[in-house]
Amino acid sequence: AKQRYESDGLVTMEAGEAETLTLPEGSVERIEEAKYGAFDEDNGQWLDVLPKVEKDLAAGKPLTVGNASLGGDPRPGVRKVLRVLYKPKGESVTMEIVEGKQLSIIDCESVVEATYGSGETWTNVLV
Image (cartoon, rainbow, N blue to C red):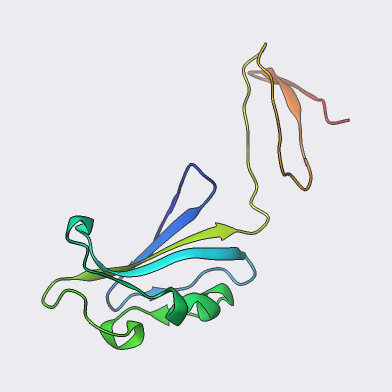
């Protein structure tokens, strides 16, 4: 399975046919989207499999990707992929702000570290 982060704080996981996809147990706040189909999104032949996989994936249960487990074959004869977009729980975010600029943190449970500096010289500024 491949993982990539999106700029809006969501994570996309992909797994091809016969691969197993597992989301880390307890790490999912919510699953936004789950679709099964071919890599070329332009043809629109994707199955919405969110209702089929949401509960098990959010609970950390492994899912083997295939036509039988996902309810059909949206593109016969073409290799398919399961693509899951989810929001992780308790995600750690690192923000770097250039001197003279303002930092705004919105909707944050806690700040665990704040440092100021450059190169080898850093000062803890968490108050």
